[in-house]
Image (cartoon, rainbow, N blue to C red; front, side, top):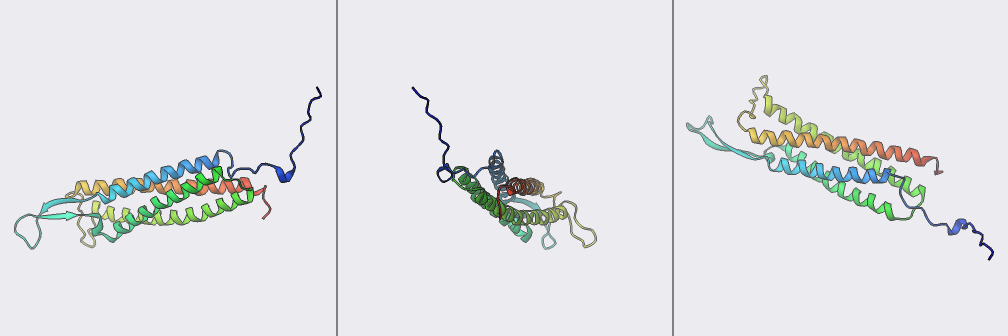
Length: 199
């Protein structure tokens, strides 16, 4: 029997490539899953940072219960809002990264996808980093006080409350680092795809 010769597929009949650039899209997806976990954890730790202590006040002659909660500070409310937004954002972009793993597309479409991710990741990084810095500044005043303006420290009284805030700020810093890593990863993906696409 004569062996059949393999006929190369025509360009129009070629199987479309999938929207993935090697391992980069998998790394992107994993980082977004970790970002979701970090943002959610930081938010939950912050929201549960309430403590009640009996303290002396100038208007009373005996200790009265005084509660410390995150929503007593506008800075902490902004911090929780930013973390909530980061949690939602990580879900949406994680779904997007999963979707491009199975959707047939061209290198140009993949390039546009990464360019959008860079823009959105940078905006989210700015929001989370600003909120983290704001919360950290207020937490530092609670820890050390400020003798120049007569602001007393409170962490010597509300220890549990301050530990929650400190842990939440640290986890949020980690989330900011993840967003920086995602921006760098997307930029590298754009660089690796740029030579394939004529814009």
